[in-house]
Structure formats: structure tokens, C-alpha cells
Length: 387
Image 1: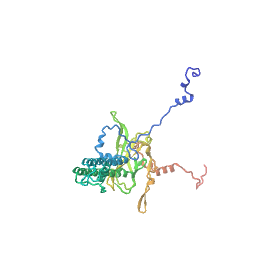
Image 2: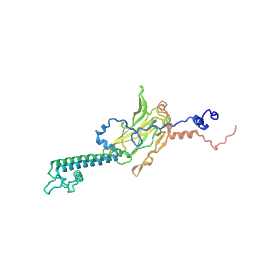
Image 3: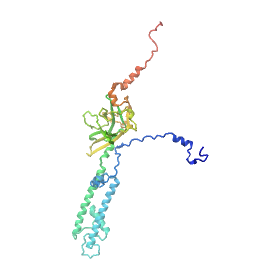
């Protein structure tokens, strides 16, 4: 109305549809919690504002091994080219100082034969360092300085070969390559075992060569604050593993179900089925360590489970069967689960109000259903007379 009378410009007037959209509240879905450790084991941490970059140069070998392959190969190539050019320049200067570059008569003895240009000096440098020796160029005993340079270049070449070969060997035989065949189940589960809530996951090794002295441990990473108000964004809490021999060592010759009994000392003691959503600030990290049987190198495999990746009231299906006198493992069912009766309350509530574990068994449920249904008989043996 006011815009028609010219009191308010039309560009400042909202259309009815736009006004309705502004009145309606808009909700943005909460983003999923960022992982601390990815499913493949890589740590989701970026290091910024490192002022003391020189510390990396104090350990050159580890720095080169940690580099990517393209950077390592570039350093490998440039190290040889630079030393060849450097010593090629030294051989050319020796020839220039001795007068080998000038035309001489037949009685003149050069320091290095057949070196009359920088190109020839560069080729001679390559022959010395890689010990090719085509025979056209050779050093003589005319110049002691040339003999000294020959010794120094050989030593430098051997050092470069040793370092670069060691780096390439370490990069090809890194321990995380062996961890590629150590697999974890995509989801973890929480179900009853012996009347107590247990957090379980499955781990397996695809190779026939075993992991010696394999140990597994778990940690809970969540945001916490102290009584003084100190906020810890990534507070790590260890989880005690259940093992009959009171150690975390496992015999990983076949896939195993790793179990953690949720007790009052567990950080999952207050966790219920309704808390397993992507809004929950919870991440469980699983770390498997061991020694590779073939190489003797210690390897480590890691994974993590967010709250929405934990299945409540489910159990892993069996995947090991006996066939022809041997145990066969069906990896197609490695991560398959089946639903089982499980209370949705926390472990604290289950401990305060204990229930009979047999009441959650499938047999008891079937029995209760049969008792609740009463079937009316279709006929009787004796006819009852009405009173």
C-alpha cells in the first residue's frame, strides 16, 4: 500500500513469498564430528606455524624417507647431476691450470688424457664416479692434485650411493605397507556377553605370514574439561581389553573378535543406545602393533569408530568353518552382523537394575511368545451338558 502511494521505494518492499520464507525458521544440520584417525589409519592432524624448520635437517635420512616418491627421485637425480657437474668443473680447472687445453707436442704429458673441453671433463667425471671407464680418458701421475680429486670423488660417490640406496630400500620396505593387509570391521558392535554389555570389533590378517607378538589397544578420544575449566579438545582415555592371560597380546592366525567389557572403570559406562548418533562427541581408536615375520620390522595398523559407526544390539556372524580337516575363513562375511536382544540402557543402569541374562536369549523370547498365545481347542472328548 505504501509503495503504491510512493512513500516506500518498491526495491525495499518484500514480496509475500519472500516474506513467508523469512518468517519460517531455517535449521542447519549439525556437521559430523571430524575424525582424529581415519578409517585407513592416517592421522587427521595438520601441523602449522612450525618456526624451527631446521630440526628436520638434523635428521636428513628420516626426512628423505618421509618424502613422497617424486620428491625422493628428484633428490636422487639432482644429487648425482650436481656432483658430476661439480667435479667436472674441478677436472676442467685442473686441465686448464696444467695447460692440457692447449695444443701441445707429442712429449707433453697431461693430467688427464683426452680432456680438451668442459664436455670431456664432464664425461670423465661421470666415468670416475660410476666406475664405467671407457678407456679413452684416463688419469696420469703427472698431477698429484688430480689424484687427490679422484680419491675425493670416489668417496663422495660411494656415500651418495649408500644414502640413496638406503632411502629407497626403507621406502619400499616401510612397515605401513604390511599394515595394508591388516583389516578391521567397518562397524563395531555393542551387545550382551555373559550378562554384561561389551564393545566388540573384528580384526583379521589377509596374509599367511603372521604378525609376531601382536598387541592391540584402544583409546577413546573426546572433548573434556577439568574442574578448573581447562578444555581438552582431544582427551585420550585408554580402554582396558578383556583377555584371559591378562595381556593385550593376540594370536592373529585367524580373524578375532576383540572384546571390551563395559564396567564402571570404562569410559563407555554412561553410553546408551540413544547416544550413538553423529552428534555425539565420541571416537574410539584401535591400534594393532606387531613384528612382521618375514622382515622383522615393527608395523602398526590403525582405525577408528565414530558414534554412528557403532551398532547397538548386534553381533558378528561366525566366519570360520571346518572343511576337509582344515579351518576355512570366509572373508565375504567379515563385517556381517546379526541383531540380538540387548537392553538399550547404559551399563550403569544395567548394573544397578540387573536382569536375568537368559531373558535376552532367543529361546526365551520364543518361549514367551508361545506362552502368551493361547490356542482354543476345536473339539472336546466329552460333551459337556449345559447346566
